[in-house]
Length: 78
Image (cartoon, rainbow, N blue to C red; front, side, top):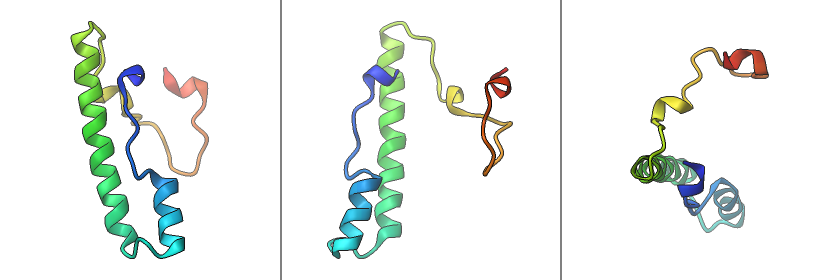
């Protein structure tokens, strides 16, 4: 699926640069737009990968046992 994924722009680094230079005033809106575009691109890439026979879904990006602020270890993938 990752081979099918296209870059989304502006990306977070580009957004931060634009905020610092003043060309983006509403950083919350910019990051919301980025998140929406990234989600749409992930869905598109999943569909493209499925058409090529890959067994992939959005559920592959869900990690129910992840705790923010803690390292996610190899053992937690099981």
